Length: 494
Image (cartoon, rainbow, N blue to C red; front, top):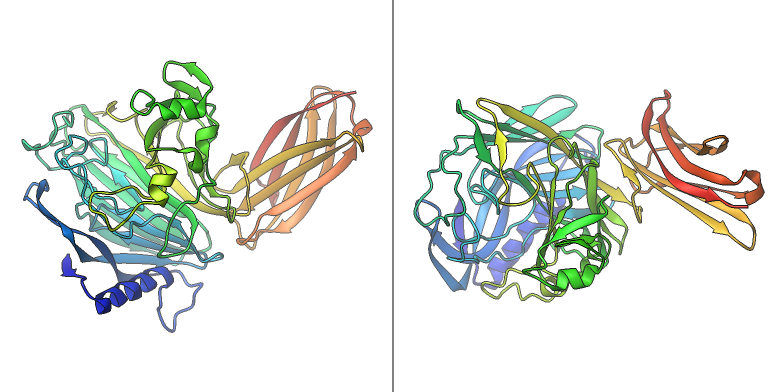
């Protein structure tokens, strides 16, 4: 990597120009809808520091901000511009959704080392950059967040993939806090990022390989720093951002941060609370940690920015592979009001959601001798959805019902945002019960990457016999294939 001090106005102008290249990808003479990959650079401004050969902190300068220029790989199709940064943690640094022009991930404007000799992180210090990145084989950002990963491109007419890989041959040194006890595991992690020609999502395949003939304890987490609907180069999550997660309970560290329990209120068991108030970023009065409790079972979660109803969601087989979900923020006010030019002040206005092979940090997962584990994670931007009832890799569905007492009628609403732009599909609404079923309406539509499709219908209450029903919505392709299906309960009264 190349490092230059930025101390002058011309240097600042250079930084702004580099951010512009990252954000808008000025590649002259190329079709904006073409699937392509190219080399680029990104400049990360941060306080100056030097590390020892073992990556522990050697020295830092709290008064000097420098610039590190990293080499990046950029993949584009008609819907996405995805920037990969293999040489600093093997991360997806940026996902720009072209239909809105907005950034989905957070990038730190000025990095600052923090936590030196605090015992919290593997190298006994940390510095946030952002993006989506794998952490292994230890918890709390793991060993590799600041290290270069190898990268290899695989390209076809319909797909471009970049495999970023790292093998843990790092021996534990004396400066590493004792709680990081996995030692040199010799495990390999391969994070393969794929962009498909006609799809508005990023596919991330994670493969973990035990290269030893013995069972290993380890931790794996995918860290995501999310700020959907942001202006490129100025990423942040507003107060009314919502962590849309299909769970009812969370386990919180209210013994560390009592405000978390006071905010959530509905206590279920020791450190276990209902999940409602902490879903809203503005309710995070301070930094804090929470975990999905007892684990994630449904395959989706994400964040919606309610200022513009843009979101980003992760789809994966959580039940089988990544049952752990960790929530972390610095606190809304702390992040929004932080002085990014203050050394050691690492609070920033974004949301971290982590998916892991174990339930929480410092709880081991196991990998058998010579075993390889592999799973897919999909990162999908959404537009125009205020909430989500169901999601999979094909579509997002939001269902709602309203009863008007004055008119004595029920209104059934359904919204869908699909990953099949330009394709013909149909949305069918039904009311199903133990004895009676009612077809409400159906609608054909063309998938639109810039907005959801809405279908609503009102019916007099006496259309239906009293009883308990399911309001069911089915999304199908033009060929009749079921793409997504879900329901919510409805009770029709006399």
